[in-house]
Image 1 (cartoon, rainbow over the protein chains, first blue to last red):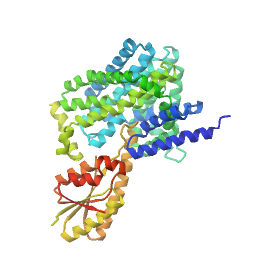
Image 2: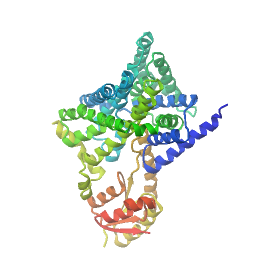
Image 3: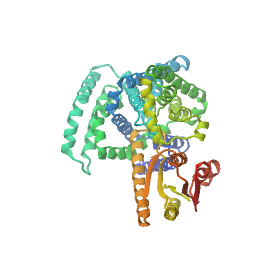
Image 4: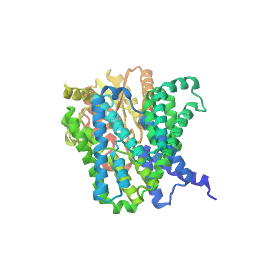
Length: 400
Length: 140
């Protein structure tokens, strides 16, 4: 009989190690968990069993809800033309580009090519947000347009993941109708329900959200769709309620990052096959180039259309080329549903991890709108406050 | 001799020693005394915005606490302290702030990374000493 507590201890030792490393080096715990999981999977035989798969699945659903619930709808309303234009172009160009490359040149199956397109279409709101906070751009118009556009891109990704592989039968119809009703009703009823529940140690508000997420997730699975689709959409419509309730947001994050996402990200890493990274190195490089190149084809011209400056256009395009959470979710979905094999999964996840790091590095190093080249930076440096003050007019000037 | 003194305060033991010396100098020269704490180490490549938000909030709480402590120590010695907190890279932010606000003395604790990082990149105090626009006092 399996010793479940021993298995749990092993996974939590790795999760603990990942947390400590992440705090020490200032890199997100998710990324470190993937890397630690990769080492665990390749060197100590770490493999997910049934209940770890269940917890990891819960983790991806709640993580996706959190990603959707972090949208600021006011920004989207104010800059909807730029956000929608850049956001959708940022989804479609790499989706079509990576899918076409995988199918016609790499010789992947149609389903595997679709997964490649979805996994590489993403943008990471969180990666971008961390850069914005550090540089003081999150309050500027440019920063807010980029963040809102990232949400739109990810919306394209979850819609594609939820609808491309669904069975178009009566279950899908039921799912779409129930989801539409929920999206209309929940923003109206949830504040009223929360007001009556009140915050309590037994966490009725969190349980209410889990009922909604898992209920709609179950229906999506019956329709052969994907549970992250309703999770993201519900997150988006409940964002104002969620962001207004700081205690609930914090508790849900703590629960998710302590008990659920370690299993998800460690599992995502454990399924990476290191020898396949070596044998697939060339393909990894090409997919990375295809993703970033396609983002340039889709996003960069639009930055000119919306009259961003040259540096702002490059900065926006590079940040829209990042990816992490939805890239791994899409790749894992493909592997779990036998749409891709482990080598293809390894290639995609490695590209996704590289997209978290490479475009961010180039954007910060050479295209910071208020920064200078690396050499100029040494000679003259601006304070974050000064950057904050001068970043807003950059876009306004372009708009006039 | 000094009219505007800046202390780089990260809450470490070294920074506390630096603050003590800076308070003494501020009293001696009747100088304006400021501290600057830099929020760095926000998680790079995060999975959710929440991870960054929580790290930012934790850093805010930490810096509020050390700022309160620094003000209490300065007040006890009869010196008014102006405390500032900014996000960014530690060396870049301190150097730029000192340059922009016209400080004539930067007081820092002897602190830094591990030996390996120190050898490769130079310690924080070494970099601050090298790049500072004004006189630097490193307190050991």
